[in-house]
Image (cartoon, rainbow, N blue to C red):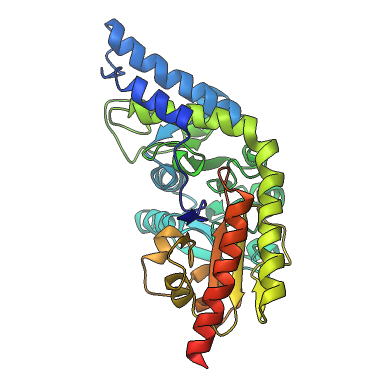
Length: 380
């Protein structure tokens, strides 16, 4: 199997896996610091918090550890909305991940406000002019992701932050796909709130983080009350092994970033060049915008993506986000970019990762060309 869906999830790094297994021995409740094994668990969590903080250029006290980016987003978005009830509305980029859109909808149901969706340009970038029209003194939160999970398109996060702050709104940024593939530190410099997930950076599933400075944390209304863990913002006993693995994965990602990015860019360019030379009707969705180097979303005219993927069972790619793929509708991201239902249904996301090899790219490129030709021939 050639795996080219690293935006969906990543394998656990062997060093991380070793640490996770080692940390399972620190089984005591990390809140039980009256005895040594409880202290050991607490220390493992704090070490991970420091590693994640260093990765995102934040302070350890700014890191709220969660079970993943979806939970972190719910804590940040709903908590911020409840903490600023005098500004009940939320502005969100229409191409956000479904988990972000769902959290925003939940938040406004509680505040009595509305979600205002900012349109995307044909390139996939958030339309700043439309965003500015939507943001006023009734808006508590502006939401625009750093990098799109389906197309890899990068948003102008500094411009979004400036626009948000000029209106007195907070800026929330989903940095899940940017982590390990782009300048994650720039997100923390621009956004008031951001989120990321362990399993996107070669860490275990079941860990993630909300990044918010200690002053803003006091504004957030807890939606998961419990025993006071994570400064009262995320109740429940922490998953010590997963969190420890998350911390090490973040540390390794910080070291590997400069090496990973040019390799991934070379791989995606090689694949696109090959299929474009071998096939007609190939286009890159989001080609006009800056994008993550590891991600390419390709449309093959006249070839349904589900049929193409079924014709190359030994190559793992995607027709959208992992969440979106389970839903029998076209990608809301591609439709927001102006693609027709047909064009969206002919699009495939390919995302490479740290373990990807040149041989895999060569074989996957050939398999993709054969699959598209086969599907087209059946439709002829």
